[in-house]
Amino acid sequence: MMKIPVNLALRELRHDWQSALCFVAALAGVLGPLLIILALKNGVIGTMVGRLIDDPSNREILAIGAGQHDAAFFAGLNARQDVGFVVPATRSINTSANAVRHEAQRKLERAVPLIPSAAGDPLVEGEAVMPGRIWISDALAQDLSAGAGDTVDMIIGREVDGQRENARRDLHVIGVLPPEIWPRPAIFLSVPDLLAAERFRDDLSATPANWTDPVAEPDSYASFRLYARSLDDIGVLSSHLTELRLQSRPRAENAALLLSFRRNLNILFTAIAALAMFGFWAAMSANLRGMVERQRVTFSLFSMLTMPDRQRCIIPVAQSLALVLSGVVATLIIILPLLLAINAAFETAPGESVARLYPGDIMATMALGALTAVTAAVWAVIAVRNVEPQEVLTHA
Picture 1: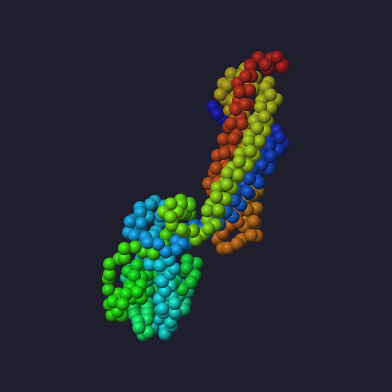
Picture 2 (picture 1 turned 30 degrees about the horizontal axis):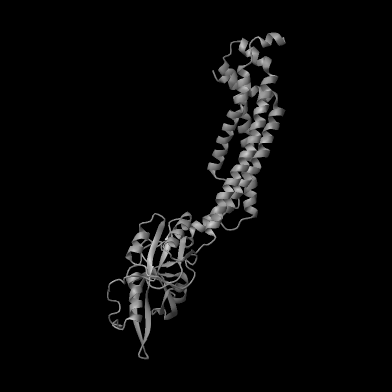
C-alpha cells in the first residue's frame, strides 16, 4: 500500500528535477559548513583534551607548603569518589638519595629525587612498588645504563659529629617510566623505603646496619601526592582541599580552562546549528506547502479515485525525506575528501587529526535530517488532508 504513494512522490521529484536539485544544493550549502566546523571542533579541541586525559600527570594536585596530615586525613581522601590516587610524602619537597649507583655498569648519579609510590599510582602502569623494589625514570635509566631486572645501590648520607656516614641498600628495578610520564631522573619507591631514608638522616639510633628495619609509621606526614580521578574532578577536589585550609594547585592549570572552553564551544556550536537547521526547516516546510498548492488538482483527483488520506499524506513526507537524505549524502560526499585534505595539510603528529568526523556524528546527522524532513512535512500533510475531491471538477 505504501509503494504507490512513494513511487508517485519520487516520480514527481524526477519530473521536477531542477527544483529538487536546487533544494539538495541548498541543504548541502547549510550542512556542509556545519559539519566542517564540527569536524574541526572534534579534531582540534578533542586532540588537546585527549592529550590532557592521556597524560595522568595532568590530574595531579600539588600540595603547597608543609602540613600535618594524619591517617584520618588520608582515609577521608581515599573515601572520596573524585580521588584517583593519594599517597603520603615525608616532605613538601622531594627527598633525595645522595647517590644511586649501578655497580654492573660502574655508573653513578648524584642527588636523585625519591618519589613515594604505591599500588594504583597512575604514573606506574605495571607491578606496584614494594620495599626493595622500585621504578626509575627513563632519564635515570639512561644515566645509569640500567633497566628492568637490574639492581642499583641507593646511598643515603649524613654527618655525625663532623664524620660522614653512608647507608646503602640494594634496590631491584621492576620498571622504567617513559620520558613523557616523568622526564627527569627519579626513583619511585615505597613509603617504608622513603621513611627509612628519612629515619637514617634524622635519627641517630638508625645505623647503617639497621636503618632498613621496619618501624612504626609517623603520626602525620608533611605532604602527599594526590591525583583526581578525572580532569573534571580537579576543580571539586581542589575546592575540598581549600575547605580543609590546605593550599594546593593543579599541575595542569590550563585543564579547567580548556574543559570550560570545550563546554562553551559545544553550546555555541549547538546554538549555531539549531539556528541554521531551523532556517532550513522553515524553508523546507514552505516549499512542501507550496508544492501541495501547485498540485491541489492532482491530490483532489487522487481523493476522487478513492485513494485514502493516509496514502495521499505519504507523498509530501516521502518527498521531504528523499530531498533531505539526498542532501545529507551529497554533503558527505563533498566534505569527507575535503576533511582528508585538511588533515593531510595540517597533520600535527602521527595518528592525530585536525578535523575529525565520528561515525556517531554522521548517524546523528542522518537522524536529525530525517526528523527535520518529517516535521517539515507536517504543514504540507495538513494541506493535503484539506483538499476536497470536488476541487478537480471545479478546476476542470
